[in-house]
Amino acid sequence: MADELFGSRMAEIFYSDHISVTERIRSQAQFLAGLWEAADRLRLESRRQPRILKTVAANPNTTVGRRRGLHHVKINTLPELRHKIG
Image: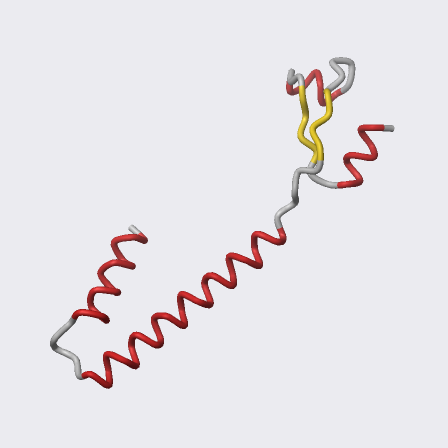
């Protein structure tokens, strides 16, 4: 749906014959400024996401190993990694 909305709005702004040249330029500038802001928000959000630092083997005797039944557990934060290692 976002692609359809994006495509229809872009077509309306860039290719429409029923708006004046001045209005078209103003609309294009606003549209591109909105895209730029959205890209900045996405960039900031991606920085906030925890990064996986290391994958460590899960001990089947631990709660995590028993509950998940996994051979490996992904560690997202440094304190979690320190806790798992020792």
